[in-house]
Image (cartoon, rainbow, N blue to C red; front, top):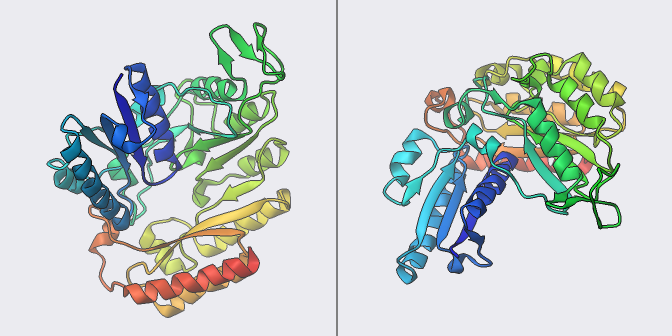
Length: 361
C-alpha cells in the first residue's frame, strides 16, 4: 500500500484543505506515513501570502531532493495558495501542481475523537485589499451549502461508524443519541465569513447559519475566522450574544490604526468606525476575548502613522494580536507602491506592539 505525507504552511484554511487531501488520498488506497522518509507521495500545501512562506517551500524542496536521491519512485506535489509567478518557479521543481479551492469542499474528512475540527464555509474573497493575494490564489467568493455545513458539523459532534452512532459511553448505538462524544470545538473558516450566503437558500446568511449551528445538540463550542469589520452587522452581534455555544472569542482584523494607511490598504472603513464596532460588541458580549491582525511597515507608513496604531492598541487592549511585517506580493496593488520601510524599522514596530499585547493581553 503506497504511503503519503503532507506538509502544510499557512492559515487554518490550508490546514483544513490538508485534512481533505488526506481523506481523498486514503480513498484512493494511500496510507499515512509515520515518517516523511517512508512516503511514496509528499504533498506540500503552500501559502503565497508572505515571501517568507514561499522561501520556506524552497527550503523544503531541498530536503525533498535528498529523499528523491534515496527513493527514485518518490512523487512530489505542490498545492495550496499559489500565485502564477510562483507556479512558474515551482513547475520544474515539483512533479505535479494541484489547484486548490472549492473542490476540497467535496472531500470527506474522517471523523476523529479529538477536540477540534475545521469546517470551511466559503473559499475565496470578493474584497480587494491592496496587500492580499487571496483573490489571485483562491479566486472570488464561493460559499458552501448550509446543508453540507450542518451535516458535516453534526458528523464531527456525533461521530459514527458504519454500524451506527457512538454514544456517550463510547458504545455503538443504532439510534441517534442526543449527545455524541465528538469534538469540543468547531471552527468555521472563510477568508471573509460574514459575507457568507448559502447557495441552497440565499436567506441563510452568516448570522442565520450560526443560529442553526448553535441549536445542534451536543457539548461543544463554535468559533470562526475571519470576519471583515466593514460588514459586521448589528444582527450578527445580537445573534452572537444569544448563542450559548459561541466560544466568546473573536478575531477582528484591523490591519492598521491609521486612516490613510487603511485607505491605501483598501480596507473601506475608518478607524473610528472600527472602534465603534468594538464598543458595540463589548457592550453586547462583555466577556468576549478580542484578537486582531496587524501589518507593520506598509509602504509609506510614517512613524506618526504607526503611532496611531500604538494608540489603538492602548485604547482597545486586545488580548491577542497577530502581527506581520509587510512583504510585497506580486500581482497586488501594494507591490507597486514606493517608500518601502526598512526591515529593521519593521522589526522595531513589531516589538513595540508585542510589548503592548504582553502588557494588556
